[in-house]
Image (cartoon, rainbow, N blue to C red; front, side):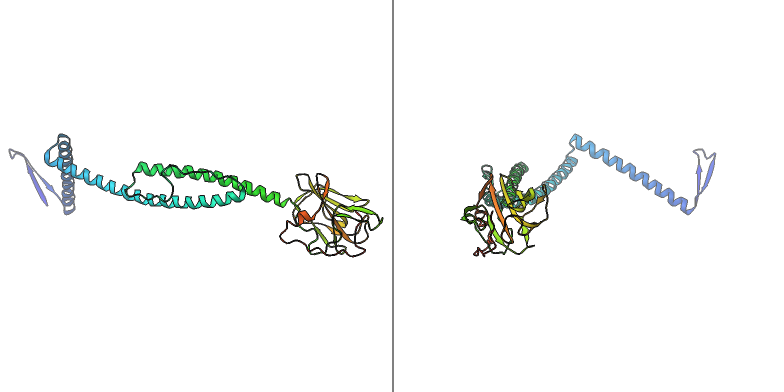
Length: 316
């Protein structure tokens, strides 16, 4: 394509030769410039009309703002409704948790005196849509109640753990399970001296080498040979409660060892002042011998008491 440019007096002329690609690029450039100018003018006119309140433009602006506001309100309302349903589910679960907590606290011996705020509690049901402020207030109440429940459950857990530990420290485990009982706690005729004497423990008849189990968890405070008790072990369970295991043939723990309920600590024997293989088991509270049956009977599976066999009773 050839373009000829001349001045006003036709004194000079100039010819421009444009190829097809150059002509297309020029057209596109001109179009882009026109679009930018039009957009700028439209923007300037629209803003000026909105600021100065031109009737037509003002109406368009109000419609746009109204539509945008309605869309935003509808979006917020839909999200508030979803959140309200979830909060309602949370409150219903909080009621279930409160009921469960009441039962568990009764087992743990903990007083549960937690009250929901006035006018609240239960599933979140409302006849009218909730506002954002009301929903936030409900969430704040739920957070406060949740913190209270967490504190309560922590106390209950601590109390139940303490009760479990105390229970595990009470000698209710038979030291020689399944074996018949010999001489019981109390006054009897001493099998060696033939005189009346207090038998301070409970005898278990068993063959030499039969495992002796710890009646409860505790710390070994004595592991030595006693002239009367023979190979003897004493386990301290706290609260001035001690169990004693006598006449062992072999011991498996030492002084200072921690033992668990049911742990093998020794083997039945006939060491010391004894007339036959057996275990002499004692329970002492503040150093005073107690009847072991008072503790062993707390076990849901107590050992059946059998008659004593002759020649298998101990002196101490």
